[in-house]
Length: 397
Image 1: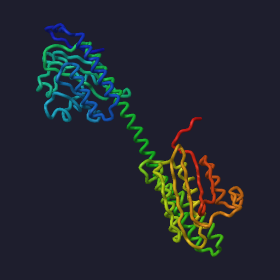
Image 2: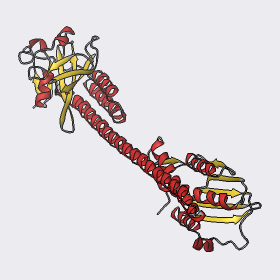
Image 3: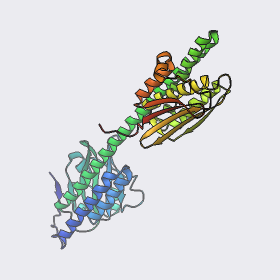
Image 4: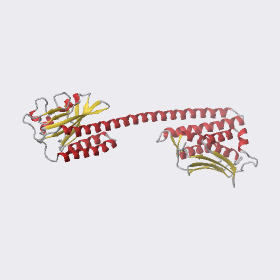
C-alpha cells in the first residue's frame, strides 16, 4: 500500500494546467524509455534518469539511491541539484525511519509532502541542508531484487500527487529493465570472453603439440637413410605444419575462430620456401577472413599444391612458384602456378589420385570445401586452380 503523508493543515488543490502537466510527463517517460533501452553504461543512464525525472516532476532535486547490502546503506549514485560532495559520496540508512528506507524495505512508494511536520520519518542531514520540504520515493528492482530507490525532492510548498507515482513508477520500471538488460549483456560478454580464452588456449596447445610432432618427424628423417621414407616423412611434416600454423592464427587473431587467409597462406609458403631454398614462392592473397573449418583444408591444399610444384616443376634446379587467392562474385579462387616443365601429356587427375596420396588428398579436400580443382598445363609450366564458394556467404537451403 502506498504511504502518503499529509500536512495537518491540509494541502492546496492542484493548480491549472494539470492535463498539460501529465501529458508532458508521459512524453518525458517515452523519451527516457528509448534512451534507457539503448543505454550501454549504467552511470550515464542513471544520471539521465534523474535529469528527466526531475524535469517531469518540475523539481530541481532528484537522486538515485543505490542499495548496498554489504554496508546496509543507500548510496547517492546519481542526482541533480545537490551541492558538491553529495552525489557520489552521501549515504543514508536503510531503516524504516526515512522515506527512502521505508520504500526500500517495504517495496511501497512513499509520498511525504511536509517533511518539516513529519513525526514518522526523519529528514537526512544533507536534505535538511538543502531545505527539502517534500519527497516522493519509488523502489527500483532488478530480477526481483532490490537495486535502489528513485527519489524526487523539493524545497517548495505544494504537494506530490498520487498520480505522480505513475510517472515515477514508470521511470523506476524502465531503469530496472535497462539494468537487467545491461547485466544480462555483461554476463553474456563475460561468458563469451571466457569461452574465447578457452578456445585460444586450446588452439595454442594444439599448435604446440603439432609443433612437437613435426619436430619428432624431423628427427626421424635424420635417422633414416631411405630416400622414400625421408620423402614420406617430409610430406607428413609439411601437412602437420600447415595445420599447426592455422591453429597458431586462431589463438593469435583478434577474433577467435577466424583466420586471416593472407597471413595463413603466406606463412605456409614461407615455411615451405625455407625447406626448398632454390625456389622462390610469391604470394598475392586478397584480404579474406574465414573460419577455421575452411582455413584448415585450404591450408592443406596450398601445402599439397606448392609441395608438388617444388618437387616436379623444375627438376634439380629451382624456380618461381606463384600463389594467388582472389575473392569475386561469391567465389574464392586459389591458383598455384609455375614456369616449369609442365605436366606429362597423358596426365589425368583421377588416375593420379589412385596412385598418389597427395593427389587423393587434393581431391578430397576440394570436395570438403564444396569446390572443384583443375590441374592443367599452362602456356608455360603448370597451373592448378581451386574454385570454392565463399564460406562467408550464407546460401539458401
